[in-house]
Length: 162
Image (cartoon, one colour):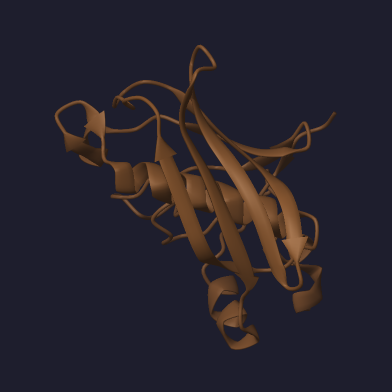
């Protein structure tokens, strides 16, 4: 199966290429899942050597956003996020974020995600519910996307915005 690299923004805390304090994650669609490699930095700690739970929650939330948005090619916002922390996540260690759709209820998209360590062990799990973004906010979001020939352009990913 081929890999599709997804667009990213300039300023987002999770995917913002120009956010020096952010995670700067890049997402891809691979094997029917959204994935991202994650290498937490020392500035992402809650206490020495351990990644802050809010950072983990943010990374899982963004991964699930792409799972919700991928098939309908539509913007969504988080309506509910639940995270379960299973083991310590250390800085300077490689991790993999994986998310997928789990269902739909009317306008809502239901998702699930995992944060896995290099051995494949699950360190955290999450579920989220997403609601379609208001049209006036979509235009603002579109203004922050980067143009990168290695990823789908925002207009390719969200064709309904032309």
